[in-house]
Amino acid sequence: MQILLFTPLLLRYLLYALEAKDRQKKSQKEEKIIERSGDEIVRKSRHLSEAGLRTKSRVSSIFLHLKELASSRKEEELIHLFVDLISKHLPFQRITYFSVDPDEAFLMVKETTDLVLSREGSIQIPIDETSLLGYAGLNKVGLEKGTLKQNLKIAHLDTQNPVSMEICTPILYDDEIFGIINVGEVIEEGLKQEDRQFFSALCTLLGLSLKSARSFGQIEEDLIESQRKVEEKEALNERIRGIFGKFTSPNVVNALIENRKEIALGGQTRDITLLFADIRNFTSYCEKHIPEQVVKTLNDYLTRMSQVIIKYDGTLDKYIGDEIMAFWGAPLEQAIHAKLAVQAGYEMVLELKKLLLQWEKDGTAPFTIGVGMNSGKMIVGNVGSSIRMDYTVIGDSVNLAARVERLTRKFRSDFLITEYTYQQVKDIVKARKIGALQVVGKEAPVIIYSVEWVDLKPLVQ
Image 1 (cartoon, rainbow, N blue to C red):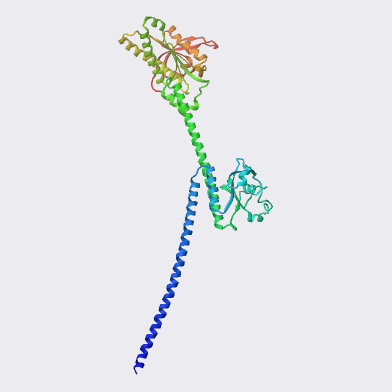
Image 2: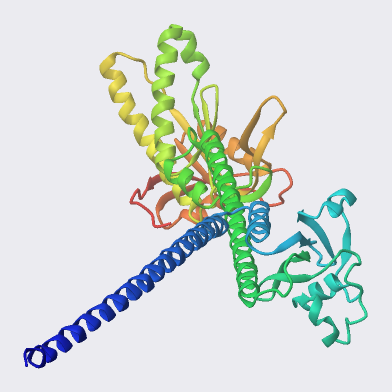
């Protein structure tokens, strides 16, 4: 009876024990599976980690190469970086970059890892359809050895002549060809598509980089040329200042610098008004005064007269002893040269009167001057020798101006002008006709006018 009572309990216990044992077996089995799985995961993870590091290292190396390739501005450096990049990161050997000659007639070795080509030295491959590289350059197309038979025009060409060719690609930007990259050997069977794409992208980048380098080079050349022109301009400006700075007004010098095309330091014929101003009886004046006094008085006079000439944009030619020679109309063309000249001449007479008052106060003996003027065609330019050159005027009109100045003594006038000058200034002067001068080479005598008054209001040029 008790057995019957405990039998269900025993069976339940045995069943529970069996289930527990079964669970233990399953647990052990699962643990082994998990353990084996963990080892596999660790192993695969380690493998992936190592592969990732290798890939990361390769990508970093490629990135550095690409960065250098994109930032370089020298063609030779770009080509070297490109060849080095594809030789390290693509299954290519015997890599050669052929540059295109300026006339686009030949391909020439620029950079190569092909020892055979290095030993052979420079070779020239015509850009025509007699070779695979020439065909690629002429038609600006890439070629691959495995696909040559598909093109009947080049199927007969030798892949070993003149150089071994597995793959060749033109380096282009738009339709401009810079060179050809040739791969003489591929070390893996069946080039991967991703390698083809990478190679194609690199060729495109090289074309862009070479175009940028050439554009940058042109910009550099333009900048150098601009700098050269600036330096030449500055040198010319300094030359202008050196020649004219002390002899004419800053306005004229600046206009010469701004419009230097108008400058002709060689001889040329211009419409010019010429002025001579001379101290009357200066020899007697010198004999009656001590040298120090003569020099001081003369310097005061020449300074004041020169300031007036420059004020009216004249060019102070020279001092001939006590005589002043100046002209208008050169080196800068002046449409109103005669008017500017008569204003200057008249103000010189007025300025001398101011000096006379000052000299009287200082006890300095006074003197008088005569101003003569003529307008006409004159030759102007650098005249002299290899030792010394002067920018001056020459010609018959110059001689006439000098003669008119000497007539101021005869006609007892401070300021005389010829009819050639008078016709250009009669609207701003009051003058009277006082005589005629027979000039050699002219049938009719030249009428002379004595200037009594000049309107000194500023003129519009």
